[in-house]
View 1 (cartoon, rainbow, N blue to C red):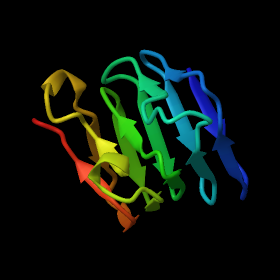
View 2 (view 1 turned 90 degrees about the vertical axis):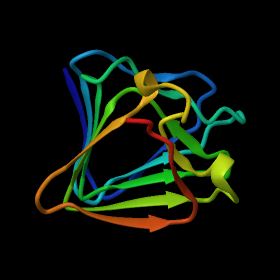
View 3 (view 1 turned 60 degrees about the vertical axis):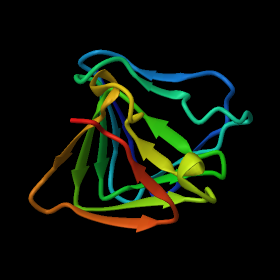
Length: 130
């Protein structure tokens, strides 16, 4: 159960509805692709992961969040190669946020491959408890 996005363009997520990564499923961004979270609402939590088997695989790709920010909970973030996290938020509440700081059940696990490099641009807020 894998959705793979390839190419050199940006996928702009502008919905008001959630995008769900189900159990034992992967949203895989291949090299040189970008996922731009830019919902047409102020909700920073529309990219949903059902549990720890729901994976966002960034393979030399970019994850971009608009000024709304992006809250990532419950899933697994797999980072391989050079990955850019770009946030246009202005503070910790509109950053790219990993975990919610209140429950370990909401932590997003992070798996780094040996060649992983992370470049942060803009606010980034790590809130995992475990």
